[in-house]
Image (cartoon, rainbow, N blue to C red; front, side, top):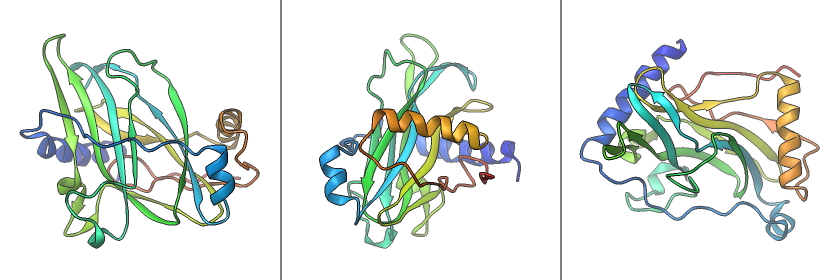
Length: 223
């Protein structure tokens, strides 16, 4: 399936999800891993690395601009998650107004297992006064108890890179998982993580992208 088909599927999720929605996802953001937490959990937990671009995309999908403002992930299995349960991992934009249009590095200490995207929210604006939200939650990102938006896995004691998250604006604004293209680009991004999180052992980072048929293309890094 090509990228355009992926976007069409994602767009249908957004359209159904935004009906009646006037507010973005409201959940407490997860803190990045600290040196103390990493030292205490590095043998039992895994570390997930990802980038998010919270900046505005001007002229996005027929709107004046759009901005990714929230991402959330559940720890599977889904049958243990109630409709009101707090996700295992939550990220929010630092601001809905002034955000640099660049990718920000994140690192999170997570218990081993599989994680599924369970919510995201995109702010869209057609003018200063005409602003709304495209919000997808569990009712559209799960089907019959199974995640359809995408998943990633974390193993004990490993550091894993799961991708770069931003928007795609080919049609309606939608979430999209990007990735560095090639070994050199990946190593350059790892240097950014090492600079921000010097206490994390980056000697054997696994390149294992958030796996999705809705919000990104398949890609394998050639070593």
